[in-house]
Every structure is written in structure tokens, then in C-alpha cells.
Image 1 (tube, rainbow, N blue to C red):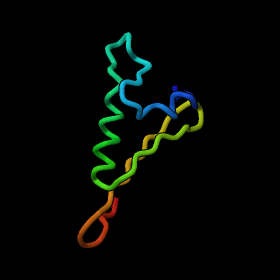
Image 2: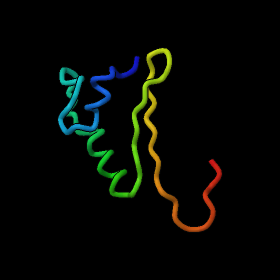
Image 3: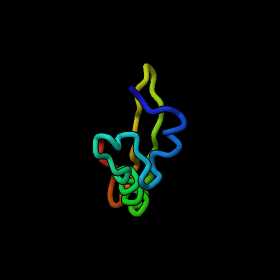
Length: 69
């Protein structure tokens, strides 16, 4: 169903969660962002049409040609 604009700005904040009643700690995306940044990459969260959300992770590729995906 997507993520609201206000929540999208905070999804990488440690301990931010909208799922506390389901046991969410709010650390998952914060940890993921740290790992991706440590690897020299980028993680983005974008609103998609019809209420969806797109999370994109981009990582650098070292050595040879870039693999076809």
C-alpha cells in the first residue's frame, strides 16, 4: 500500500517503525542503509503509482565488465 511522504523521509532513522504492535524494532532499514553505504552504494525509497513503494539498492562493481542483469 506504499509509504507516506512523512514516513519515507524517516525510514532510515534508527528505531523508526510503524509496526511496533507487530514487534518491529525500526532497525532493519537503518542497518541495511549502513551496510550499503559501507560498500560504497546507495539505497533509495520512492513512491510508485497506485500506492506502491520501490526500494532500489545500487552497489559499485569492481573488476571486468559489468554483468548483464
